[in-house]
Length: 69
Image (cartoon, rainbow, N blue to C red; front, side, top):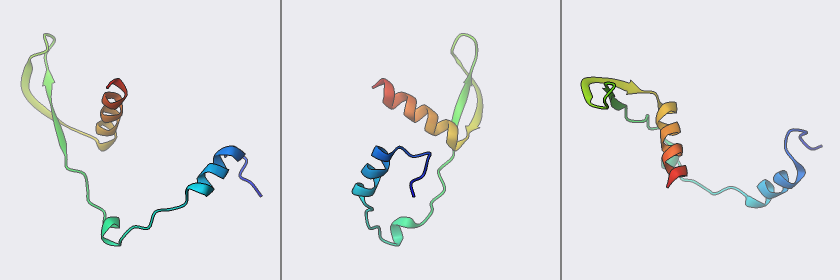
């Protein structure tokens, strides 16, 4: 029985891809390092105040910069 949410062509490609074996050490969870960004004023100058970015925000920024370049 096929999953109705996965197109048949995609399901076939995923099955062919297989899985890479990973060592147990590679599966250890390491929390992401916090990333801080400085707040800017309306002229684009730093204000000296910093905020911590969420991991989701960091990933979104990373995806955006990779898409541009």
